Amino acid sequence: MYDLIIIGGGPAGLTAGIYAIRYGMDTVVLEKNVLPGQIAATDLVENYTGFTAISGPELMQRFKEHAETVGVTIESAEVSSIISEGDRKVVVTDIGVLESKTVIVATGANPKKLGIPGEKELIGKGVSYCATCDAPFYKGKDVIVVGGGESALTDALILSNVVNKIYIVHRRDKLRASKILQERISKKSNIEIIWDTVPEEIQGKTGVENVMLRNLKTGDIFALQVDGVFVCIGIRPSTEFIDVKKNSSGFILTNEKLETSIPGIYAAGDCRDTSIWQVVTAVADGAIAAVSAHEYILDHELEQ
Image (cartoon, rainbow, N blue to C red):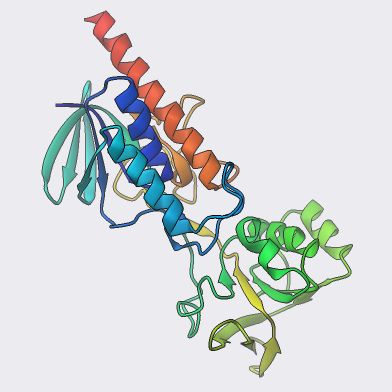
């Protein structure tokens, strides 16, 4: 039986593994992807402390090398369910059934995609899912923000201080974001909202050049020449395999120690209900969750 099983080998999971090893815990990290984490798909990272600029894959590789150097065991496995039997947690995977005293779920989340031609091909070449990460690359340029909720308007406001022109493309005739965000948007002279419209195709050879848009009411299709597309239609957490309390979007609810509704099971990083989804917060979550898991084991040992 392990002291700790960590599900997910992204920034949160690997950091949890590093801290667990430092606390002398018998630990394994389970990860289904070769190079995990949303950050691995990010062309350039400029907002992670200590690195002026580093590619996402390189940063992720450094996390992995650090974890392996200190003795973290990483196994390739996909988890299908977790069963809590009091002090024993049963983790069902495609390589067998594992048992542990504690579990940290660090499976992250993935941005929802538009699913249109050109999107996949131009990710990192003009198509982005994070204004906080990529806004500086579009200084003085024209961009589209797709969406009408909190994240879309927040990203548009971030971009408004950097880019030349922002077109918010929204499929409805009303925004879903809070009133205060809508008021802030209305005061920005470089933001224009295109109502009742959806993107049909993103065009460009080495980068975004045009976006084909379709008006849902008239059916008219027209091209908009821009340098970037920020897709802000939400993110989807990878939490379907675990039965704990979640919010309406599926993000795991935790307390300040990152404990879930089941004692001994913790959540860290983008899979949990949090105010910001960034590498730096995922790393912090991993450390907190590992320390909390260690304290949980010590407390139970004292009770026995």
